[in-house]
Length: 457
Image (cartoon, rainbow, N blue to C red; front, side):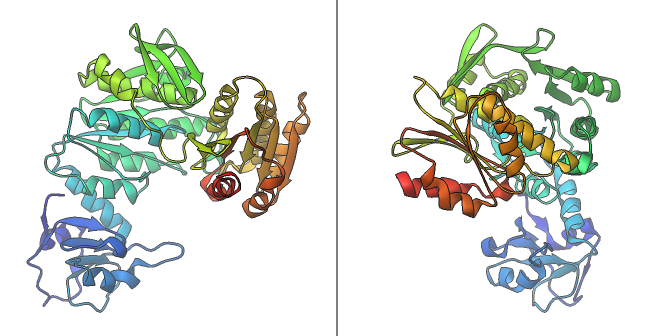
């Protein structure tokens, strides 16, 4: 980041130094909330979490070189400490100020599914033409977004941000902080219903990314969802560009074909090969092209870069473990992403003899509709010709119920938790099986992947 005087940091966040006699003549050269990675010249911001308090680590951060800290209470250290009422709010204030100092074009991405994969794909393309920066992980909340903004350097040309939410108003708050030049809504579907109640409320929340758009900015949105397009055009006075497979879209992809670990689609009469699994990856590629096109990137160059992509970790990541093929999609789950993953699993069956196995964890934050959505997941698994369904967690019985009451015979088993599932995998998984492992982060299904590696690796 561009260096900021310690004294100026205090003024930006409206804080007071806990000791007026402390020397505050230095400069901040970067920001962290993790004392383990603290280094010379950093500002350490003490964040309170459910199971930790960053104030307990201020001294450790300073021992590693942090030049000052922001805290909400006094601490006994020799270096400057800026006292504020709310350290997370102060982080946002500092990031908002810093955003105004940047000359970078800011691109912000949101959606019920595909945010991280789309951001990574966009980075892979744009970084070949521009000095481009993104978060190292899915930093998409009121802590991660400010930290990503503050990580930007003076010569960055593009800053890619991912905006997430699980409660009303969060996207609007983040986009007003980020003030994007380009905003993208990948897809709207049932996710975090516990916080929103209805899909219509989710649509409005995702569309609110337009509220922070800079003057002259552009909103790119999924044209295959006409209700989304209608809402944003009616609600926001901004340029809207649509992408999708419908002929009414501004950027159209046709002949989408997913085939196991790869797929392809046609854009502007050119066949684009995408070495990633699932139909969603093809839509992600179309989403990315809609932005890259307006940044004057040639379609031939785009196609070449897309053809060399690698999957994002734990997002339909194909792993061969001895005689077993694993589709590792343990990062997150909602009804739409589950449907995409199951369709992808089915596309891996080549000769009809391989067994398709679905290891299903729970889909989190679906509120009162949780049991219904999990039952429908079991039905969907059966419809996609899954042979073995192993479900774990709170709604495992609902998943199994949905599969059992379908017209297709499926071997099913429910487990109380991931540990119990792992202890029984050896009874169900056979050589040559193709295994989809998918659930919300809360399920911790990466443990099942590790157990499969132990059994067959």
